[in-house]
Amino acid sequence: MLFTAESQVDIHEQSPLSLAFVGDAVLELLVRQRLVSTTRLQPGKLHATAVKYVSAKAQCRELALLEPLLSEAETAVFRRGKNASKATVAKHATPEGYRASTGLECLLGWLYLQNQNDRIVELFEVLWQGYDPAAQ
Image 1 (cartoon, rainbow, N blue to C red):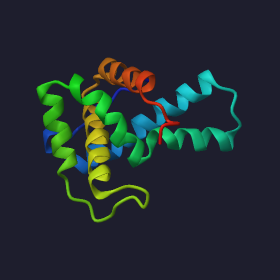
Image 2 (tube, rainbow, N blue to C red):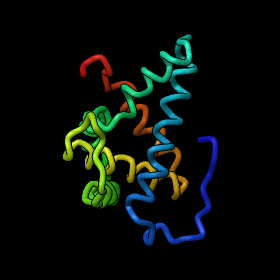
Image 3 (cartoon, one colour):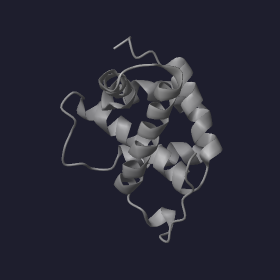
Image 4 (cartoon, rainbow, N blue to C red):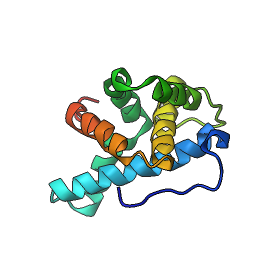
């Protein structure tokens, strides 16, 4: 990963939605980097393709690939994010799917803030290889 994180706040004191805020950016950056390095798409098509990987609906389906690989601690963080209450829901996702995507983002943010970049890359590779954005 490009950056390492040094938090002045104990990660266990962070709200799951704060972790998801970071995790959303982590996933977006990984997808954008992969698309730019593997395709010659124009910017508008890059964005449209990236959305197929980072939307709440897509993240919910990607989670099915990752869940069996999660450790007990990672599963606990995912559940914490999934159960966090949000006032809004994405317009193209079900409430259940949106909560699941928040859980995935929470997990990625948690891993990032602990500098577990190798684990993030490992999970992202599984996601990238196993997820078919055309199967929406």
